[in-house]
Length: 528
Image (cartoon, rainbow, N blue to C red):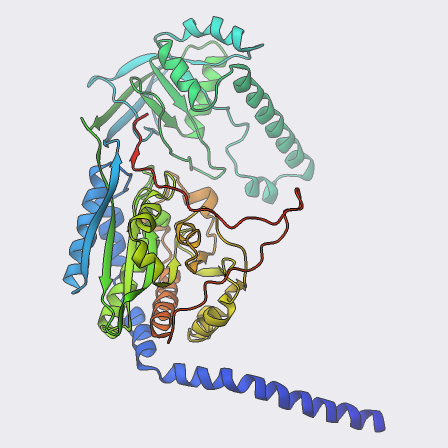
């Protein structure tokens, strides 16, 4: 009985201390619920969303935004006009030049041993074919003993399309095998795939060339064109990157059609294809730029809260989840803040960065060219990796990030933050997205990382990254989150601490890890 009395007393004391600890948080939550700016952010985002219209105009109307293309310039002009229509000052800010190129129509047809239209497209910056196209036999690469054997074989490619990707043993993604196959069958498939991957790696290595230099060697030997298939481990998805040839076309063909051509060639059927690739190269490099918009601060106009999203994309699809969703998210946040918070304490600036896909060039150029803004930036909120609702936020190595980010997040409705995992102080981002350009300059810059929605396989840099993959409910949730974070950061009485946390030891060297170093932007790209 005595023990039970002690237990009840301890429980009452603990309950009291917990209640006291919760009281400030509950008080803040009550204040948040009564904050008219936050209430109006939520109301605008849920009852007057512009996301679907913005997404349609950008992804369907303008399309992909490869650096150096007319579409990138068209998208920038569209964004500037949109901001101005909302009463927000906007401009483009040139930082360099890039190889100019414009994608045209691609037709790929097998004409022997039977007629079949094939699914595929030219890679970015691929040279065009003559207007009537190129028709030639398709060949595969044999195994080579060494680079000397490769050099002896090279003359045989003249006038032929050369297949340089491994023929996949199965077009079914692994999750599909796992669901339906027997355990033995599944293991056999994985062993076969791994063995083929290793054998093909050795085949390419024996040439003495890399994925970049092999197409050039084949081009110099007189090949009619290069055929690739960069499968993304999902039904119907290939990753579409850039060509390395300067005179002959490089095309990517879907796994199913690539496999058919490969088997026909390997079995002596001598398949022939016709490729018509219409593209235009600019006579001289074209400007590269960032698109900037800002709502001027009323009390501290020379201090900044930055919203960050890269504007460019690869062009196999329309760049919907990489990074169209990040783009329209930040545009919608700016529209709402202009409506409900038109006189922020600090200037709220949005940066739609150019050429992120080629090395964070737009954001790196911005931090180089705008040192006074960087010096006086309160926080950066960056969104990039897909359409999903935000699921992870790291403190990026800033020692006191828990203090201010914790308070700012506490202002966001619980139905949005309850599933967000946070790590404070976390580790600084060294690359991967544009927040890293600011972290390297000691600016508290936070990546708002999203739920996957099969991003890596199905939409990241693929031919299927299109409007229909956008999950607008999740993007709308991210709008509310980001708008409230920007509002709270703007209202913060003073600039927050930039103190770094002590970096952990590198397990391989035993030495402390280094804070990421700022890297220069590529100011003239795509020309070599």
